[in-house]
Amino acid sequence: MSIFIKNAWYVAAWASEVKRDLFKRRILGENVVLYRKEDGTPVALIDRCAHKLVPLSMGKLVGDVVQCGYHGLQFDCSGKCVQVPGQDRIPPTAVVRSFPVVEQNNAIWIWMGDPALADPAKIHQVLKTDDPKWAVIDGGYQHHMADYLNIAENLQDPAHTTYAHVSTIGNPASSEVPVKVEGSAGFVVSFRWTNNAPPPPIDVRNGKFTGMTDRCQYYNFFAPCVSRVDVVTMDAGQEHTEENMDKGLRAYSYKFLTPETEGSTHFFWMHVRNFGLGDADLEADQIKGMNQTFDEDNAIVGALQREQAIVGVRQFTWLAIDAGPARVRKMLEEMAQAENQKTA
Image (tube, rainbow, N blue to C red; front, side, top):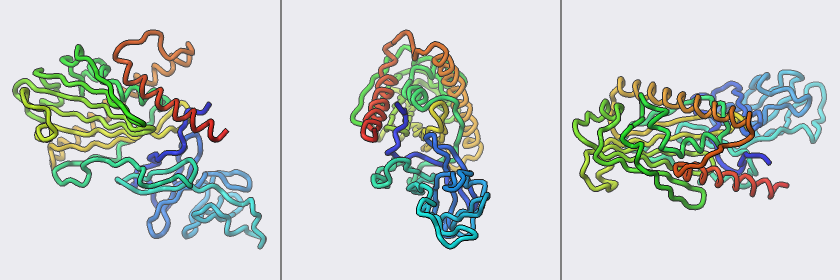
């Protein structure tokens, strides 16, 4: 059974990656070529000529059509062949698959499933990007050597941050605080508040806290591909209202997971914060810290996946902290299974 969920919007690329040339990327096991029309509209086609299967990305753009670099067949934005050099008749089989794409939040979103179901309203809505009191870092990308299920589990696991991210987001004061889990259809959140405790090093730098703090981590997962970690640090003793949380140090850390293969994932990230606006040095530190944190995740999750492949078992022991990760995996596996059954 495929672990992919095709009827969903995924980030194919950051908007800045797709230009007036042919850009290739493997998405959900399919080779895709992306480019922009002369008017700037993004296009996505299967990266495979209908004739001899040569990747179209090895060809070139002629106006708004793609010309295969092997025999010169030209395909328009819908995937229809519009020219075959040397003959007038165009075979009805000379067509390549096109994919619905939408540009939103500086990203190119792609729908790999049934195009009739591709409703742009279903694209995940990123919070606060239009609010002038919040700063946005986008364009973050890493290539992770693990399947998106293991990555999704890791992103639903607050407990690992104390040990895997000691120099960045880890907070030893949180290690004994239990994690609560809630959810609904297509959504799981794991969260905890660490109250009246020293802030972690990153918050000392960014928020200049001098006393005890209350700190929350809400690990939200929106199936099948969006993680939003809501992190708040505020002076201890306040009521935990949205208003008070927004007055503290608050950030939304987004990760958009796009499966490349069944063993690798495109890991796009975006960070939205309410502090340090206009501070170039802080922003540079944020980018460095985020990449370091996600590198640490990549190393850990890649290693556990390699061991899983050796022994053929996901894990031998189950702990209370596994409730959120297990719930996310079950949700995604059930969605993939239901989709596979419909197409069987």
